[in-house]
Amino acid sequence: MKQLHLKLLIIAGILSLACTTKVSEWVLLNNPANEYLLVYYHKEPLSETVKQQNSKITSDIKSANVRFRSILKNDIDRTHYALIYGNRLFSKYYNPGELENLTLSPLRKKIAAELMSGKLCVMLYLKTGNDAKDDPALQIIKSTISASPFREIIPVMELDRNSVEEKHLVSMLLNVESDLKDINEPMLFGVFARFKALEPLLAKGISTENINLMIDFLTADCSCVIKEDLPGTDILFTNDWENPLPAMVNRILDENPSLLHH
Image 1 (tube, rainbow, N blue to C red):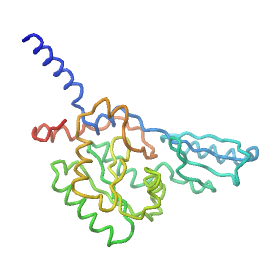
Image 2 (cartoon, rainbow, N blue to C red):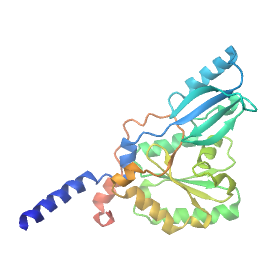
Image 3 (tube, rainbow, N blue to C red):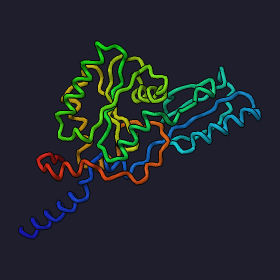
């Protein structure tokens, strides 16, 4: 009986060692960002001008998590570019100029820098432009993060839904779920790892309880279930994600053992 008890203790110890890496850290280190597909749909053979145009686009996006393809398709109304993630159409572009800064923007660079510096995540707040809606939710976000033991490793950033500079980022966020584009409410996205955005909290769903649940998920021990069915949508971005700094969450948990949860 004692021998069985000892064996169980040893197995439990091995499992605990295997699963102590937190979700946010494990995904950053081990989970490459899912790729987008940028397709040029055309009805006629490609002219030299279009070939050169597409060659430049391919060069511009080569460092990002996206592949480019040209597809001859006779049943389309107009020649266009389509941005696809998984099996879902995110956006259509009828002018190559619309693809400028598709994979890179100032806010995306800022968010990636925080993730690479060892921060747990970035809480990205997508505003509606209506202060009566935006301000109360923002106060809840700020007060909740300020009260969290992980506050120093969770930056809060704001994004205007009508931002021209960040139009591609806004579009991708509003495609994290299929019906978000039709909802004019404040949205809070937890962004972690290699720019993976969790499904957002919306309107009155932006609550202290729900924000803390999101933090609990990111600070939880990683598990096979999470690894096999990882939630979130990867945002298109130019970065190699090499050599991130150590995850700051580990220091906080080491200093505060009472925060450890399973």
